[in-house]
Image (cartoon, rainbow, N blue to C red):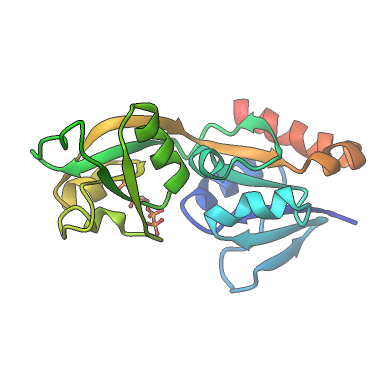
Amino acid sequence: MSLTIALSKGKLLAGTEELFLRAGLPFPAREGRRLVVPVDGLRFLLVKDMDVPTYVEHGVADCGVAGRDVLLELEPDVYEPVDLGFGRCRLVVARKRGAAAAAAASTVRVATKYPRVASAHFLERGRSVEVVRLAGSVELAPGLGLADCIVDVVETGRTLAENGLEVAEEVAASSARLIVNRASYHARRDEMSRLLGAIAKARTA
Ligand code: PRP
């Protein structure tokens, strides 16, 4: 049976494709709407960013490519052997440009796709926090009065700038990571080490 690899359909897909092609590995064609794609001895699952760790942790996929931002949020029980070096971005707290920070004693209302990361960030700083969980476009929330600030990923900073927000605090740095199911890593050692070897070599090339 061929190895199954879970890939995010989002921003990491282009960097993953470049890496796989450099490593001489097959990669699914970008056109088409199939979500399970067998290509030359590998099987690819095309899923949402936040779902990649779930497929890998449950062993439906042997490995996958996920952002560190997603891994910090979900804390899946998987191996994380390789920083792939692309998809670099930052998790930050952002608020309306020029807005003062909320008073230290008050509860911070934060809109985010990363509820665990956001809660931990404020609680570690002794702040009480109320999380407003959104699925996307969180940059809207402060301007519309839904939240005082957001915790989200910033890559170019364009989305923040165009929505009147600015970075207030850094939370964590992120990049794409290869993650591997713990059982597959041992049970399918030969195939896995060939795949990991090819990827590691292409990553440093
Ligand atoms: C991410 C993130 C920001 C944007 C940041 O969203 O949530 O909205 O990218 O990128 P920038 O700093 O280069 O502007 P994404 O496009 O992944 O979509 P989503 O909101 O649907 O998750």
